[in-house]
Image (cartoon, rainbow, N blue to C red):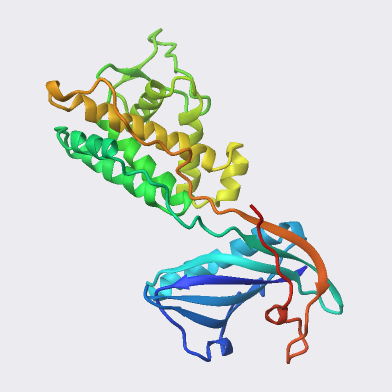
Length: 331
């Protein structure tokens, strides 16, 4: 089935006023991307690009996922040819674009506005804890892990958060690498390998991945499978798998990996910092903030509807001409 989506991008580069004359088309006809108009966001140096995309999907309930795959493909190419920051912002509508229909099924997306005021949190006791940790005498690996943790906290996309937290975890693990030898593991089942000739289990100094596994087991002993799942996530991500494919393979959503990963890094950093404080400054208790999730969530809902989509000058349904239908959140 052919669908059309109405959506917005935000960019730090603008487009000419007659940009609608140009489109980006997949050579196989899988999608056609058009910038319909633009809105300059005064004061912050960005532009909102109001776009349409015609694309193929098997059914309406699959349309948003297939649309996102197409639009991210376009954004990847635009990053290559512009070196500009062009980001997906939000989708407004997705409607059936099949020929010969009067009533068309579609989705209208409603987005919850952000909270008008941020939470008051930078209390004196939080700032006191920050001042205390600046006294910690830590090496370059821990400082670098702290930097990657910060980048993971502020990152917008789950993929970036996962990778930043993993970099931090690896640095901490190498820094805390256990001195004792570890057993060789089977690459398939991950059980200890036994040598029939020597009648013993071979051992070696821990590899980085084994140091990471040891740190995860030390900090989160109640989650023995976590390292294996997180490591599979990393390997699939590094080999180009989409988030959807990764989630199907590991049996978890990515946020279910990111949050415990970030927490393990957080605890590991705290342990290192406290140990590195001068002995007289080591606290018996601390007041710290802990988020319920590291992932950036937006609340949205999709209204399934069937309605008339007006025709444009070319005789084709034009989603831009749909007016008078509104929806919103009630709190």
